[in-house]
Length: 249
Image 1 (cartoon, one colour):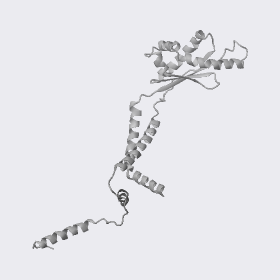
Image 2 (cartoon, one colour; image 1 turned 120 degrees about the vertical axis):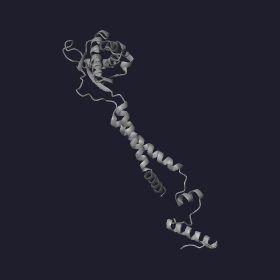
Image 3 (cartoon, rainbow, N blue to C red; image 1 turned 180 degrees about the vertical axis):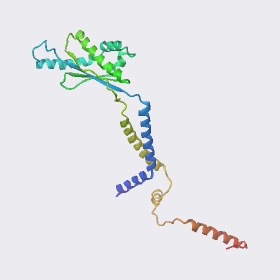
Image 4 (spheres, rainbow, N blue to C red; image 1 turned 135 degrees about the vertical axis):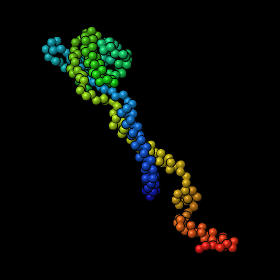
């Protein structure tokens, strides 16, 4: 019973502050949309794939041990790709105005489990530059690994390509607006209950019972305006009559 009453009270508060909740939610969504569309720099991504494998000429058939060896080497390759030895040459070839440390933050190297394919993904403010960095990194790594590891088992499987109409991967505008809607809704509901909690005016007989801790034994009905005017007029006439003044009816 208490839970039902509590839920009813909650619903009444939400209904009473409905416009406030909607206003805050819409304002939060509008702010998120403006920031996402006009203030956050779009980020583009380009990816290239590298295949780690032994040359067919070195062995007549591919052995299981060779595949396992290549898989173990991939973890080492992932570190080498983002090393200054590789990225310094990438910066030099592309004449980039950044340090190897800054370029490292733009590159992500991953590979699926038990796969000899390594994905090199690059994120940048310019779509064409992301493609150039991805392809140059793969090419430089393919050339430098021969010297660094004394092996020749790396090939560029799929170079990055600049699409005709590149789409940024960041920011996710719709996701930002959805998050802002949830946050605005939570703030609106929270503010509604806070205002209701801070409002100490007496609005019902239940409020009187809670404050005085006494039962209600009677109620005074609201007096219509016409009755109030009639009462005031009668009082004035009575006062005028008592002073001996003539009253026009």
